[in-house]
Amino acid sequence: MKSQKFPPGLLVFLGGGLGASIRWLLTLGLPFTVIQMTWAINVLGAFCLGFLLAFLTGLGAEQGGRKIARLFLGTGFMGGFTTYSALSVQSVGLLSENPQIFWFYSGTTLLLGLLVCLLGTRLGSAAARRRGVSLATKKVGEGL
Image (cartoon, rainbow, N blue to C red):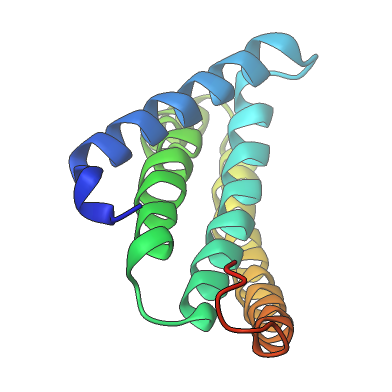
């Protein structure tokens, strides 16, 4: 399929709706506070987005399925799944209620998010290299 059949805005919209819905369901369904879930989802999302973007970049030019995957999964799904706005609002509330928790929550979200994103990019790049090797051994016409 050619990416022209999928309007970019529609891919982002559908992916974002799915990501936000899954975040909401996880927050309702797991026995953690909203703040704990926001923290975990944002850290997990940082890893996943780093992995996805490095993996897709390592596979080659952004076209066709790679462009669709980036728009739907990266910009859309991961953008809806993670939530900077909730992090900000929760941080402001914690700053007045419990400054020690504020510093822990805000600091670990940022620092751990950066570290796991870096880990994700390293693993995504390695996975793309391995995938590239396996693609190179396929015969022309076998597809992905």
